[in-house]
Length: 234
Image (tube, rainbow, N blue to C red; front, side):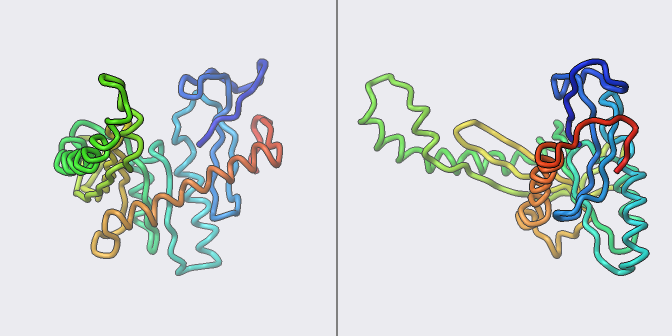
């Protein structure tokens, strides 16, 4: 999901608080460098609107030609929905790794690695701060020194189930990063087993490649001049 800014009173365009502008919210599905779906949507719909239906359609087409190919579905947190995950779980050779928003329970259960990441960073920072302090005037802000020390990053894996929206327990992998900008915490929910994909490998090798699709979106909207044309499906 991304935004497609408009100017004027185009049909179906609405102000979207997240994107801070009047826009459409097109739905894209890519397979590597190949565009499979480009569906223009109003920006006032649910962020996951149409995602399940398009996923079902695309996987159905793939299965007609490649019956046993393994399919991995990657998506951002807007698509961490019960119906999408359940659909993937019911298909043969279909797995998913989807980002999900943090919450107090997930953060609480990651408290151990949060403390380890913080302690590791501060331990590596201490000798650098001490050696660099002679270059600064007394009382001068040493914040720039903190940026010289790489972030401390830790991963963990746990079984988790929401109180109402999920029908079953699922595997959640948490990435904790602590550094000069403080704590950053990310989660992904996945059907891939811990026995084959430990937390760091799962996050880095299976989820992070999703970032490459941002380049495909830029190619669609900038290089190919994919301008809004409401009610158009490609």
